[in-house]
Structures are given as C-alpha cells and as structure tokens.
Length: 488
Ligand code: MN
Image (cartoon, rainbow, N blue to C red; front, top):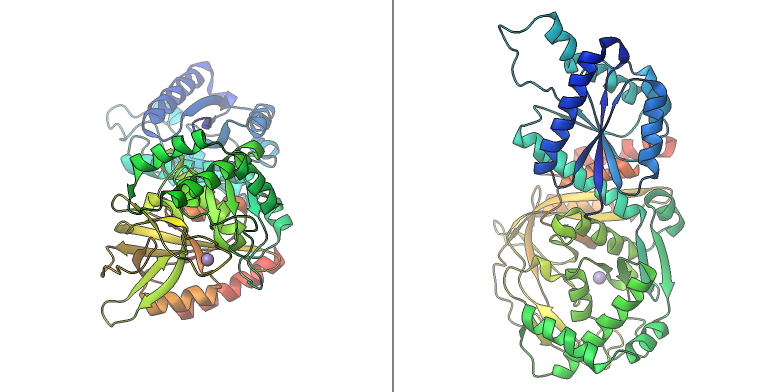
C-alpha cells in the first residue's frame, strides 16, 4: 500500500494579492508536511487553486496518477465555487473536504480586517461545500482543528477507505472452479461488479492448478515448511498432509501472482486431481493479505482482500468468516463463527496449531491439514456484500468478540465467538431481513464508518446494524432505499 499518497488542494482566489496568497501557500505546505507525520499516508500539498483552469488541470492530473488515492480540499480563504465546477465534474478519485482553519483561537488583540481577510475558512468552506452538494458528489466532510488527534484519526480512517477504493479498482479474483451448486447468495452479476467496483473475476480450471502443483519442487516445500514451523505449532504426526498443503499454497500463489490476482475462491465440489481441500494453504495465503471465499464465493473473497488492504500494513485482522451455530441460553447469547477449514490466523488470540482431521464433505481423498485456534476478543464488524438484482448492497453489523465460553475440544477448526448488536435474536432478525449472507468478512481493524465511506465512494447501497437498530426501523429503511435505488 506504500505507493499511495493523497493530494492537498487549497482553495483561494486571486483578488487577495500576492502577500496573502504567499502566506496561504506557505501555511498549506506546512500543514501537509505536519499532517503527513501523523497520517497513515503522505499528504502532498499540490496547489493554491485560484482559477477554473488551474482546478480542472489538477483534477485531471489526479485522475491519471495511479499513486494519488484521493484529494483533500480546504479553503484557507474564500474560493468562489463556480470556478471549481468544471474540475469537480470530472473528478474520479475519492474526495474529502477538511473544514479546518490554520489558527486555533480567535486572537483577541490581534484580530483586525487583515486577519479576517486571510483567515476566513468558516465561510470559504461553506461556499465550497455548497457546490459539492449541488453536484451531488460523494465526499467525506471532516471538521475540526488540523492539529487535533480526533481529526487525524478521522482523516486517517478516510484515507484507508480511499485506499480500499484504489485496491478495489485493481482487484482481480482467481476462481478455481465455479460456485457450490444450487447456492444463491454466493452468486452475483460479475459484469455489474466490474462496472461498479472494478473487480475482474475470472475462472481457472482446477486441472491447471493440479499441473502447477505437480511442478512444485521438494526444495520449495522445505522452505515453506520452515515458515509454517516458525509461525505455528505442529500438532500432528502427519507431516505428509502439511507438505501437501504447502504444495497447494505454492502453486496457488504462483498462479495468482502471475495473473496479478489478490483474491481467490475454490469449492469442495471441484477438487479434481487434488487429495485435500486447501485448508492450511488458504489460511496461510490469507495471512499474507490474499482474499479468500469458500464455495466459490468471489464476492466475499474480494471484500476480504480489500478490507485487509484497508487495515494496517495491508494485512489487517480481517478474515473470511461464516456464521455456524448459536448459543441461545438467556443472558449468555453468542454466535459461533468458523468455516470448514479456512479461517485466517490474523484473528488468532494465541499461536495456531496445525492439525489434521478427517473432512467428510467434498472430494477429499486424505485428511486435510488446517490451523486451529481461538479468535481474539474485541470490538469488530461483520460485512456482507449481496447482489440484489440491479444493485449491490453492503451490510455491516457491529459485534463484540469474546473469548469462546467453552473449550469445544472436538471441534477441529478455528473458531470465533461474538455478541452481535443490538442483541443476538434482534441482530439475526435484522441480518436476515436485510438479506445478509452466511459468509462475511469479520474485521477488528476496519470500522463501520470506513465501510460506509467505501460504499459511498463506490456508489452502492449501505446498511448498518448497530446497538440502536430495531427490526421496525430497518424494514422501513430498506423499503425506502429500495425505492430510491430503483430511481437512481
Ligand atoms: Mn461456507
């Protein structure tokens, strides 16, 4: 993610004279430099924008610069907004309006008309905001003093969501085989997903993967085995099964890297020529930032990769997850999430164990090796992208992950336990009413606000289930959104 930066475009106009404009430029450069020290991505001061062509030019430049992940604007002085129209109508990058001012205080003794002339963001930012509302452009507005930590945190969160947009637009998903037969929610319009989100979703034959696996050398497997041994506890005698997973991982990684794919899916119904469903292999790939979706679920796979990129270091604690079963005891109500094998170890509370167990479902000839662990405690979200036919809907639910309340010694997979908002049964009613899938991305790093920003920038529907959501309010919201999106 280190290639990305953001541009600081500061609004003004020529009538203030050179002295004022020089001060605006100096202060803007200073602010960008200072903010770059505390934000997750560099903020580069680009221009003090004073004329229509100048603004149109900087926006054209931003559109075509792959390293520019978005622009942040601010008006130190007044900047008449008609001169922004011709530029803004062409903007294709995420856009944040920072409503701030250079000074913290109104300087009692010092304030005079010269001060007012230079420091008029309070009304400059209003003129700037009007035209963007009039243009109905998606943007984030962050208000507050530019040295305030809360402002830094909100700008930083928005930057990461904007990087999620850049990653989405370059997303390529490698599908090994098709979706699991007869399943509805993992289907979707791949052409629509590419138009809206930029995703290139294509299928490769399992036979091509088997050919690649056969070409993997013992030396390559030895090297990956050393990585496994360093990162995980080996809790099986069956080293052959682990080596087989290493072979699968190396082959999948080679194919994905060759094609520039950052996410993949497979299905237990199409493992022709393979001895094991990739378990450990998929888990270790996810730990390196690749997205994954089981049963051919390419939507959750791409979302996992994007949310990992939005988290810290491009490999945040975001993972493919599935709701499995409930604990419905009153006062102690929890969801248990897991998957057949493939839960990312970035969620793990302690060092994961490599185990081998029989897996009855699918075409496994041999017992697949997998990582087994408990998920971390903490606030998190679960995210589901569904195809409503004609549009995509992103559903986010707030959850609190807990240490699993029981050992479950015979459950041979990684597990995460959580309390969903507003409570388990209302949360389930809301989730089902919204049409949320059984597959989700669970994230401790990415926030609901970041996903809302991402959905806004992607121009897709967003639904958020919080501690305050009721089924009644949600039904009304979904009904109104359905009408709105049909008109859009
Ligand atoms: Mn599944």
